[in-house]
Image (tube, rainbow, N blue to C red; front, side, top):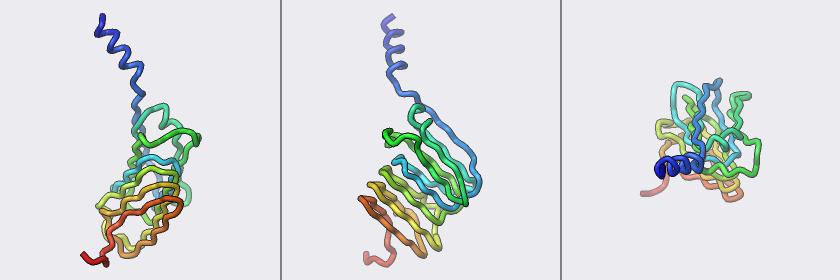
Length: 154
């Protein structure tokens, strides 16, 4: 009986874990302002995958318009730090992240010709695994962009 009560307590008290994934139409830019952790993964397809508390991820919306994937929330009061978004795409030219969270770009994106990134509102963008021919980086309001400068001395 104690084991049953303990199991019931754990199940009721544990957050509802959910995973959602969806194939998307083609995009080559991402714009997110929800503050979640985002992994950008090179793949042959365009897809988004969300993992986290189901009561939280149900507030995340996305749409592709004019080849731009916009990731938004219908609530500004929710903390999305525990949510993980995996975004799959064969290529990317523009990345704009704001309102916190950390975005990591897969090292398979190699030798990008022209890439533009903006980080603001305490967002962190880690591009340290990627090589660029041309990188335009804009950070403001506490945003950080981490990248390797091939011209820097060792």
